[in-house]
Length: 177
Length: 325
Image (cartoon, rainbow over all chains, first blue to last red; front, side):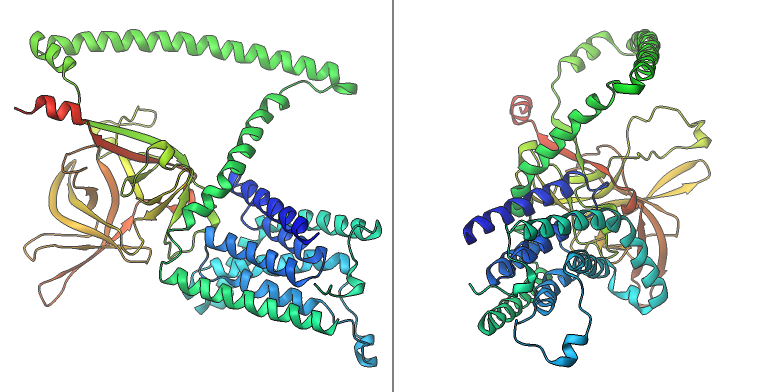
């Protein structure tokens, strides 16, 4: 089962990267690969799929580097933090509103894209934070136009798969390998 | 379940540590050798996607059926007749140009001694100079100002090797202007702007070292505009600095350099090939120690890059051995 997951994850990420390389103008970097890798990791919250997804993101960074590997550095930690242990929560934690699971993928993908865009900027640009922030927001515009629909569709597919019983839902917590 | 969460955190920490190690290795340049291999791994998919997308325009021009079927067919018929008209116009223009070319060729033959021109026509070239077009794989807005490398869609299967010059595909630069009665629309035959140099050639993709990257070096010749003419000035070495500007080294204290001087390649493999343009001198300070500190702004705006060309040359060995005494 895990090997099948790994093979599917590799194929999907390879195809996403090929699409980004084929149309660098229409499909900005990271706009398909990042949601795809997030979907791989969120499909079944296991250490195995997390390592596959993190490895793929690192592979993508080595092939197309930015100034700093922000995305492969932060994504595993972010996804680990997004999951819960399944232990009985304390009362005060129960009251805290969490991110609905269909929104987790677009949210994480957008955060990772933002980090990647920030790591693409020249280091000394941040000495002028206002100008750098504006530049950062402008650089996010084109990738977000692709990333948000793609991650929305992938989130719906994940939800559909959960409803149909094809994948384990997030409510059951992390899967022990 | 608690163990599972611990395992997740352990995996995440290990991946983050690996990413940090990769970042360090990248700074040391240790990952450069595997980058073309990774890009090559994606190339079959990229080429397949491009092949599929090249089929799409043909499908798009087909008239739509259904309610708009008749209007679509009428539009398609109009388009077809428009294209046919354009084709005829182009054929007429082509024939006119061919006649003009023949006439000019005949005229030029009159100025050359018959025997010499025949010999020149039969003499094989010593150097095979070719331009290989390629697409940029790096997205335009990805370029950080401290640019280390670009990736392009041409590799060893296209005959690329290390150190070959990469020139801008979009525009061409010549050292003549309105003073020489040159106007918009005139045909430009030669003159290319240097973008960088092939650093590593993979099978289907290559990495390009831009002119501004640290480690880039090229022998250049300065030219100074004096009225309508340009005079050759100092010969120097252009070096990338890792900033948006390049610097010139190897200048003698007796050399004259001024802001606005144009920087051209000093030659291709020791031969004067097409006039390859690098940029313009934006700062020239003569320091107290008798040394020049010269900054050159590259002519290429990396944001404009979409397609580039690789200038490839090789000695034709048979020709060299035949022509040797």
